[in-house]
Image (cartoon, rainbow, N blue to C red; front, side, top):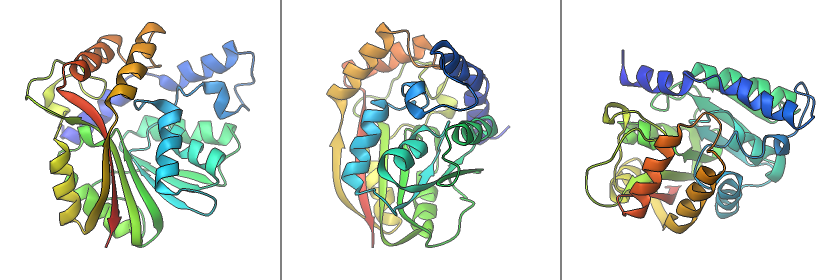
Length: 263
């Protein structure tokens, strides 16, 4: 089994779709037709959830008419948020077939299929045309990607000249020992944490100029503490969430945003 298959198996082992639809039913809504608000952000599994997505959209200038590529789109929550709240047209690509199927179903039931689409594929060989997008996103995905330079090269191919690459990942701040499980991996065999400088170097080598970089540690700690108090996000191991919080508190890990423009 390749490490990509192992990553897909990690995310595909929980029937998140049933849990999400259960939330909709519990709220007294129709599971065949509902809105993104009915999921209360449970379809966005990155630190900060929908609030972080809105922040990134604002920083990236995403709006009506923007063509956005979401690399590692998961359940499609980010893509639907950008379409529903900002008017963007979004295509998501994910390595986990179960997530792609769930994302398509959820999108259809929210009435957003005209502006949000998905395909099953690998970030290192994106199933998209050249020069097709204004913005490419990598949100809490790079931790599972060994060859980040290949992903950035593919993003550069898919973006139009002057397009923007936005990375929002958990990155290594200091030390080299992490306690597993973590939300994205049970062991270090499928976890490829790197410091911000490694990301910036890979982006530069792929034809990007880094505009700016922001560490989002206080927001992440507050988000994790709230999530643990409420039982944690749907489908995420509580112990893994606790380990991530501990790593953020001791300064080993932190979420970082990087904005880079294609030359």
